[in-house]
Length: 94
Image (cartoon, rainbow, N blue to C red; front, side, top):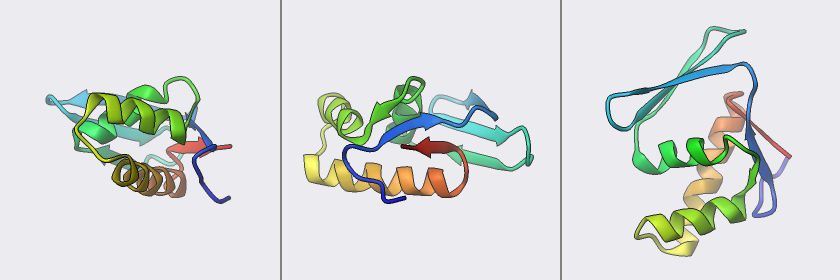
């Protein structure tokens, strides 16, 4: 699937997660036992935002309001993050 601005992201139901320290989110797939970590504020915020399904465009809009980031740079980073998370089975994209 090609991920774009209108793509809706949501968490995979078999992922256990928790905050480690002040910024890192550690995730584990309860089926495969694989671990995945997100160690930056923006990644942690994306994870928080997609507790409920949300589009790439909505995520970027929220991040641009909360962080000092250019809209194009934000979208590129969110798309990269989303592709990586989908490839690792952490989130679903629709």
